[in-house]
Length: 343
Image (cartoon, rainbow, N blue to C red; front, side, top):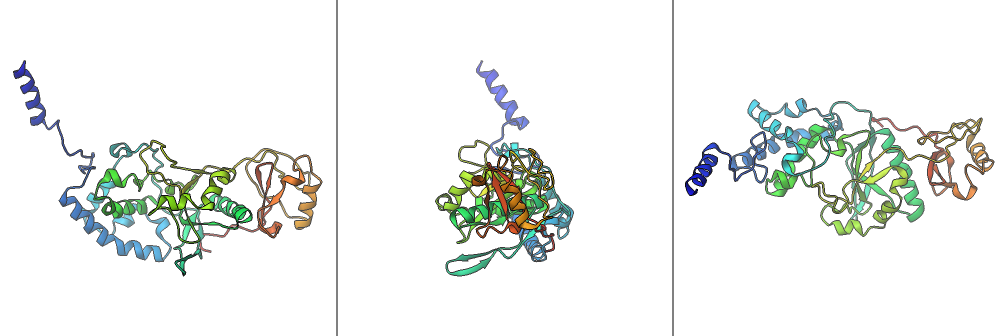
């Protein structure tokens, strides 16, 4: 019996079936990279960082492709970088869906001029990019937040191409002792990030004082802005992607909110002329008669919109710059065009 056990164990060791360093399909040690691979990661970051910085200054990161990211690299470096691109979430203990690779030009709104006051110094966030619908609902949500608590949150991170996500993953490996498994708890693998899905885009929030929760989660949790999000974000189509104990292998991120699709108003006036009632996603009301006409129309349509439940989302009540809440749903009364990506 002992001889048989010895023979089985010998076959396992000789055949390489027993491994003390779990490797990915690309030969990477997901627990901790080998010293050789750590040196290669450092060399990649050193070579790519100036390239990424330059693209960021030009506002060109959202359109970054894998081939463009590889352009400063030699053939060996390209192949090594691709081994990270080919990693699967399941290999590193993460259970989130594959979003698909997103690269090249997208229909995005450029969000610039976001200024914070951090330790008595003004800090301007780098330009961020949101898909038009996400931008619109983000603005509606912030107007409501300002109306309710006189505070707002800013977008610290919006859309990212999958190539940019790949760079960020290797860049942050050093923060986690070059463990792919640990890094993947904080930074999604390329193709798995909700920041790369324009339709259901994730937004990382930061408050006016520069609190984003990444260094101290409790700080962000204590914000009145966060409490407001927990109670109200769903009305604007946003959900917390990674709450506590979600069980998908991703770290709890109270700042990370995903746009989950337009909320549905129970009765949306989509025709000023006929005052037609319908149940459909938020839409624009035409301004043929100007703001007073639209407000008058709402007043005469009490059954669909009781006056007490129609509240402007801007404090000054300017219909040209506001949406309205009605029966828990949203009705857009804004005639402002959504700015183009070049704005």
